[in-house]
Structures are given as structure tokens and as C-alpha cells.
Image (tube, rainbow, N blue to C red; front, top):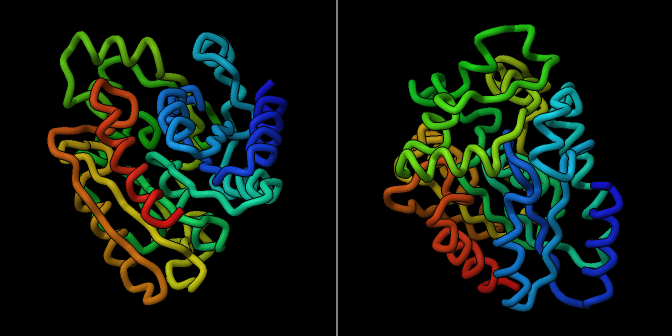
Length: 279
């Protein structure tokens, strides 16, 4: 179903003649987490495309019933999947990604595949060195067991509350957990964890490519999973690209759920304003 959905959205984007915008979700979410964003961008004149990772189920209910479909997905496989989808678009798209989707966004931009990029609380790429305690605690449900490399790992509510929904009320956190949370492959987290010890890491980003295009990094002030130290370290490396605009902004009072919680529109408008400046 997801492959058919992706093909349909790509066909619609090509037929529209509008500037496409590809949205890349991260771990523990599905493409449906971007539905409200897609509506905002479409209303602004863009052609939104919200692909899944390979084998993503259509719904949260299906995902939680069949967690095994998420297992065994590494960063390179997911990046190549999105690169293939982008290659089927007639215009080079803007790309917007959250968390591991923000890392994938930067890898795609480093390949020269993005017209403009927005990476929101992005997972660290190779060479991003800080190891904040809150990040380690957020990753512990996966990294705590080496067997999780080959598994799909769900978050308990308490784990989701800490890593995603720490900046919202208890009531909203429970609503977000029930509405959006799905299992996720363990492999990408292990790949990120050892990236700085592996010269062939799949999390490597070409930050120097003159065709990278403009890039905005967005950090949620209260994010436990990807705090400011990580996003800012990525910015400092990306900012060395002399050929393209690189910017960073922090959104006050927001955690890792900033793309899906009740304040999502502020983040969407920030991303939209950046994309509009260039396309």
C-alpha cells in the first residue's frame, strides 16, 4: 500500500508542475505524522510528498500489530529508498526531515538531491561528537540490548514521555503516544552510536558539496533526544560549506515531539518560510 501511495503522490507532484517538498519521518513515527504539514505546504502552493521508509505500514494500528516489518532497516537502505523516489520527481524537491529523517535529509542534500533542506532535531551524523546524557538515556531502550540491532523496538509510554513528549502536558503526551507512536528498527541507532569509530559509517554526510543547497537546522529547546548541543555541532560542520546558505534556529519550550504536538504549526511555518525564500 505504501509503495502505491508513494507512486501516486509522485505522479500528482509531477502533474501539478509545482515545487515538490518531500517529508522524511524519523524513528517511532509514520508518514501520517506529516499529514497536517502536507496540507499547509499544499495550501502554500507546493506539491507535498510523504513517503514511508521501506515496508512502512499504512496505519499506527497495523504497525503496532506487526512490528516485525520495521526490523532490519539501516540508514543506507532508507537513504537509497528516498533517493530513488526523488529521482522519479521531475523537479528537484525541497526536503524536510525530523530526527533520523533530519539525518537522512542532510545525507540527501549532501548528494545534491535537494533544492532546499530543513532538518528538525536531526539525529547526529558521523563527526558530530557531543554525547549528551539525555540523548544516551533516550537511546537506552534500544542500545541497552545488542540483540535489538536486528529487531523492531517499541517505546513504552514512559520512554516516549521522556524522549519525545517531555515538554507537553501528561494528557497531551498520552494522546500523542496513542496517536503516533509505532515500533522502530534498532539498526539506525546502533549505526549512529558507533559512527565516529567507523570510517565507513552509513551516517556520513557530505557537508562540502557545492550543490548541497540551502539548509536550515531547527532545534527544540527542551529536546532530550537531540538537544541543542547535537544540532549546533551539526550546524558548525554544515556551516563550513562556502557555496550554500546554512542557518540554525531554536524554538523555545519544545521537545522532540515538536513536529506532531499542539505547537506543530509554529515549526511548520518556520520550515515553510525558509523553503519559500529559495523556491
